[in-house]
Image (cartoon, rainbow, N blue to C red; front, top):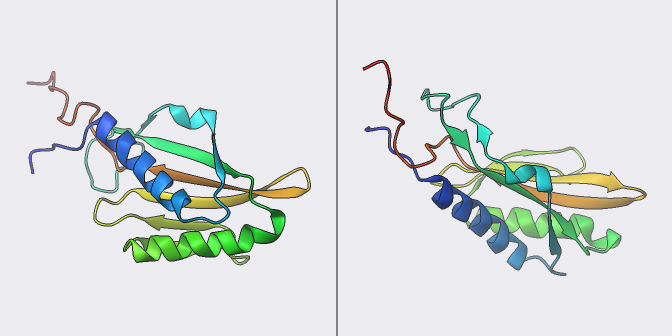
Length: 145
């Protein structure tokens, strides 16, 4: 392997694709509300591939707004079914069934669906994170020559 990865732009496009394709199957269709702190790329702190920590991880998270409270569990079920139909691996589901993690196949993006209280209401958020990548798709030149 020559260390090449997808670029930051490609990773962001894939993150957005996963989220938008998932939300498109949800009824009633929620309004996406970007979680602003997810706009930044993060350092690759725990590379699962044994590679460099000098890479980055691209992620986005959105609140899924406009889902009636009585439909939350149904929407979670719709998302789980969609992920399974895409061949994604569901790696965890909470006891109440409202929090879920998974991985896309074959590109191994981390997926999350979380529920939280916003006042008295439950609100869902969905996120996707890339594997560790080089911003330009290729390793930075090493200065240790």
